[in-house]
Length: 256
Image (cartoon, rainbow, N blue to C red; front, side):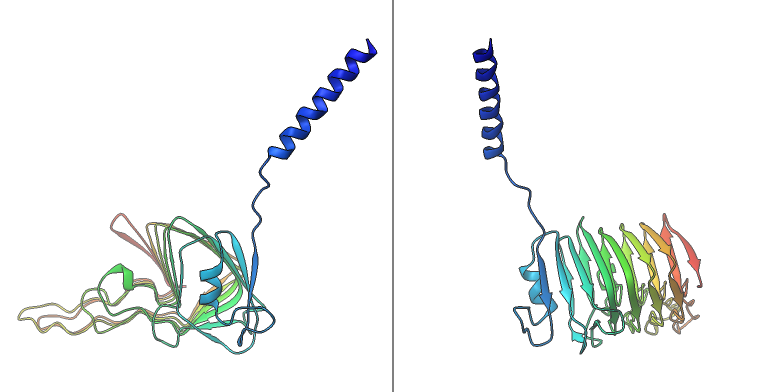
């Protein structure tokens, strides 16, 4: 009896060890670092770190001089700065500061996004001065989005979402600030009998068919562009100085 039980226990242990040996260890997210100058084994630019990162990785960004970059994210990442006061991504008015596309998850923590400028075209791809987000779940924790704008002097809509443009996405703000962003005014319509074009919507945030969750955050000082002149009549100013949530052809404008 004892020999049979020992045999069974030994066989069970062997099977258990075999299963463990064949198990694939779970993937672990990596942590990359960035600082101006690329010292201490860190990358010298955020763009280089994003390119090297795998999906689910985190990027630690040291504070100091602003990062003068225009970035694109198409994989799940977490970007963490030292603080919103010291870790600044500055678009230098050369384009959108941050473009996020795809069904991914992106977390931004302890940083400032400023001086972005959307393109001057009439398509939605040009909307969003600071952040352009299509389809992603985006969370801002202790983030400041400020002094961004959409492009102007184009026809139609002048670009919506001065600070943030979010389309078919989930945007969450935790302890964050969206301030002093603006949408542009379109060009004049000199067509015979033509009407002026309307200003861009959502000076702070333009939500296009998605959801926006705001927790203990501040949205202030954002403005929309005025309507342009037309040969027959002028256009209207944009909806929602603070937030404009657009769904099924209707605007829910919040002048926060």
